[in-house]
Length: 146
Image (cartoon, rainbow, N blue to C red; front, side):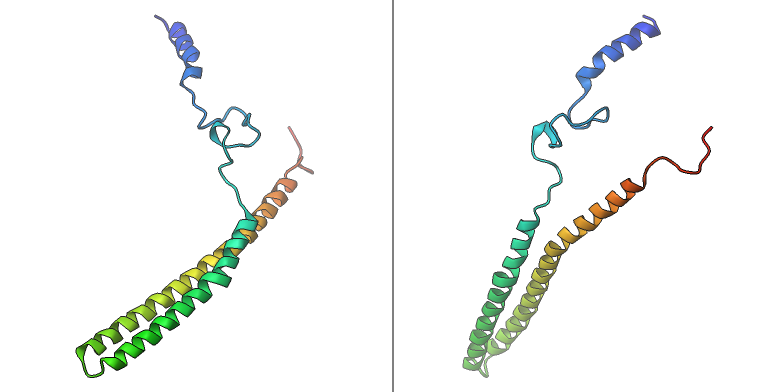
């Protein structure tokens, strides 16, 4: 078998070996949908991000603070009840650890809230940047073509 026959065999089998996971030879026939006609790979839902940030701000942060204060009050009462015992010292250690964990949780919630709010802004700025770059692409002016 010569090269021409070998090459023809390879070319005829090529369409059978392709998959829909990556298409570099055309556009997606599904109108922008992701693989196999599913949902797009990258989707943003600004309203849902705002709602999640609002939930963190109006429910999770205040309720976490309230729960922390209740636990602190109950622990302080228990420490007073066990005054003079080793248990009181252990409860003080637990309370200090609890306070650190609550502060870390509140900081994490604040970070997540700001990230949710900042995502919409970041995507918007990226879109504006992309549009301006595309708008700047056009026929070269003042350049001699050979």
